[in-house]
Figure: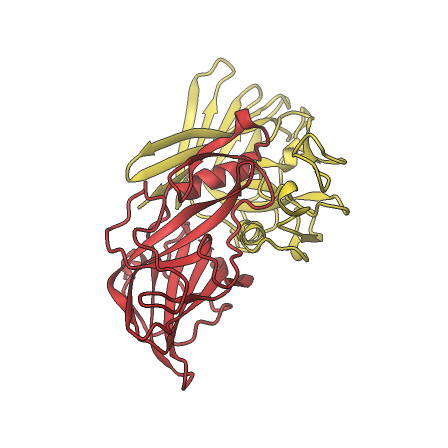
Length: 220
Length: 225
């Protein structure tokens, strides 16, 4: 079977950060998106899924170019649109490509939303991001964590993980998942590099926690 | 993200003699490791093997927002020049307030070429047999490595990484492998930077570069929604 067509949900009840799934094509640099729902009382997984992340948006290659060039000066900077729809002159500094969001931070890291419009290469922000909190329609964002770089015979990867706990009192359906990162333009700014539409949505009942993995991979 | 590798061999007067196109298959562990350092803003150190085979402890953050570990620098000067890797101080503004600078040879950053055709594995930390910069037998003169030609044509975005190699060795030079080397750093008080292999490809056929001929190696990186 053509690996390119593998995008349906499969049973991956354990989101081991060191596991290396194989859903990308040979020669591809991309990401695998995984999720799992866990009942907070029992600790048992109630649902899970896995697919290739399909939607690196244009800020990803732009930030990659910025890293490859290591431009320091304003005149050399690459103009990249941030999540506030402002073009930023990104220059080389420590924060570039950082996804290290702490508890409750919705500025960067893995972000979830309810928007269901199909992604385009020009997307710069989630359609309808879900706010952090315990009120109606809100989720409690955990801190972003990582699985360190690992490899097998064909694939190199590292894993970005975030938990989203639902204490809102109602079910929240996730229709989009994305990744925001930091970069520097006289101060830290925020940029969306990935946005995936979740066809059919992921219903997160109150009292359950959604765990999302993005595994960035290179396949030989 | 997909990458195409395009090799063009030209005569001394610019005539195209051979073109070889193939999918690049080989973003290696080094690429993911350097991207990881930036993603998690590694502050305590993570070990990555450099092109000399030495384990180097690298960081993703240096002096908070003022610094830069220079991870993933691919652009490079050519010839016998060195890449200057600047460091900043804690109150500084890159690159003006740099406290010191380390260097990496031009042939150790950017696109590189080699003569060996051993199959690629993810953990390749260098080309198997890199062709050195120079005019001696079996050597090629390295031009600068540039990143550019950014094109948006929805739903695609592409950009190129390009380097030229000139044969003044007096004989033929066989190229069987190409790759990309990038910088990785441990900056701040312990200023240092080294070179790491982030991609390696074995060519579908040997490209023989005769004396006076020019070799252009281009990676076209494309992203599609």
